[in-house]
Length: 107
Image (cartoon, rainbow, N blue to C red; front, side):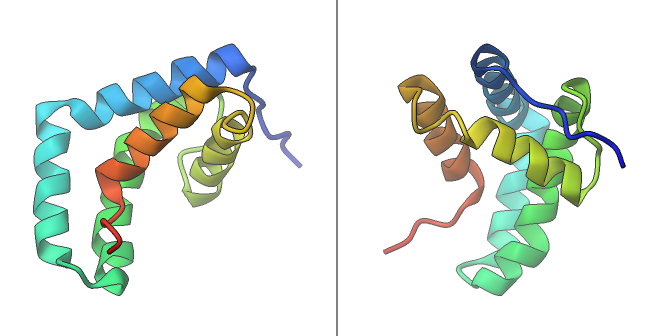
């Protein structure tokens, strides 16, 4: 069984900044815009249309930090970053910025 990579606090901060920068690339902003428009406010469509686009955008960065480029690897990558949110306000701030890029606004 392959060991799950771990991220130090510094690496987690570096990684989340890279993920946000990846989302901010013009072509990725456009992909997300199209996916969100197609999904509308339907949560099921968000999961089917928007989440796969968000996963694709993050794959190269997850791979760079030693995670696999599949759903499991992306989940592990996300959890490796999220574990620092409770103790690092900067990581928490970036985490919230990242969620805002692909999660629907809840009323």
